[in-house]
Length: 156
Image (cartoon, rainbow, N blue to C red; front, side):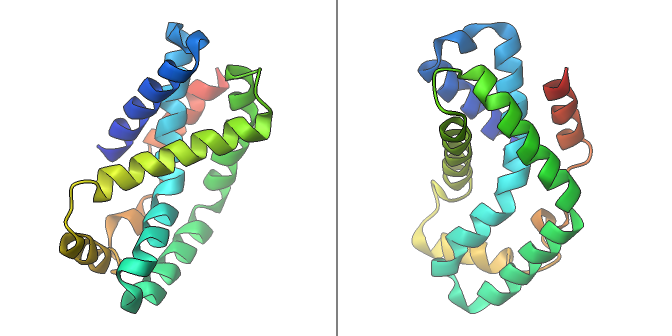
């Protein structure tokens, strides 16, 4: 669900910024970039945000993030590579590195808004304590099948 939310928000954001994105094929590509990057950036974005909110469980989250990265390394590299290839095509007027950095930054901001936006300070700490558990779903999400489906669209 969070991936759908982030990908739809990303499409809306980029449509507002980039007029060629009004084309239906471009909207689909942006949606799939959002889906793939939400999976790719979600765990590290949450881990980073929780460092200051719940420092006592920081080691557990860091270990869980490292294990997630190790387990999903090939797919993470594939997502990063494909986004680096596609973003310059979608926004040819901007330097490629700037486009990739901007889309990653926007996805991270949307993830933070989705997870923390309406929470009180106490609720944020509670959330961070919960994700300190290595059994939390975000540390065990292998991207199947949504990331593979998103990448398939990006290769078309």
